[in-house]
Image (cartoon, rainbow, N blue to C red):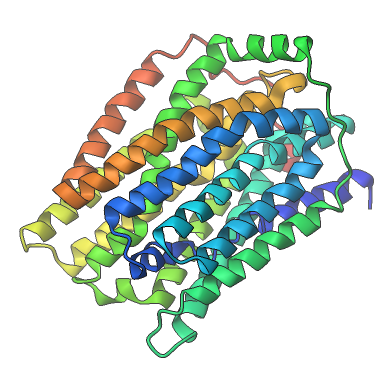
Length: 418
């Protein structure tokens, strides 16, 4: 086995257990068991994003200085500790502290995996393979997360007589995330770069490029549209379970979350083909449009429920929108990271990725609090309608303002790999 192939296999294995979140489909219910309502849930999740905001730049700079490998070890360990805290201190304060650790862990991992892959390929003169390899890695990440959701459903359903044993799902998540850190110790270290005026100058130059500034605006909108439904899946299922009881079954919920990732993973692997067939412009337009449209359908179902007119068929239609939302979820990672990697110098690539992530997380932290407070005060239907309409208008405005030629392809897609 060549050195390159060994590194790629390790990175793929790392991807499988990077986000093995067996407990995520049930955290809303776990928090609720200890007195956290919808507004409180929005606040707890907001702390996660605020912690990411606070940690993004420092961890990005640190990654550029010491190289990506140590960050691939530290990040999963922080995630493991954060989930352990959710279990050890089941209270509003404990949940806030646990989510803060989870936010820091995600901040550590927001750029280094992509940089590690790109620099590994570049060292072997294969950087033109990045889009195809990133798509493969992201597909494995989604498959791993999907399998962990199914595991979580099994543990919750079979762990006690009432089918709501959520604690074992948290234990499994903490163990699997720690495994990712162990795999990362076997990767070959990549050199860091000293922090100095030249570094700051280049990073500032990259961040001021019109294409990067435009991407920041686009990413803020897309990120908000992606994250709201993800955090709202369990509240939506809990609400619709009064109409379709199967949607409240823990095993079915785990199976549903696993199926969502099984939809997203093949799409991620097909990004190179989709780029060649439809182009980047069409894909960048399609992602926010699909998300906003799905909100409106879910809002219609909730509005019908408020009037006492929803049916099991309408409930399933709302759940079907979860799968529509997985299309942009499966596509966006490879597309966004390819955009950055082909436009940013290697000196500050991780920091630029972190700045993009920082802007999106900061904005969404506020959005998350507002959205879940709105759901508690005004209902889910009104909130979904408002989020869909505002998201649609914001996405169209950002896309209309993009600099000419911004989404023109740069770099070569390796046809042998697609």
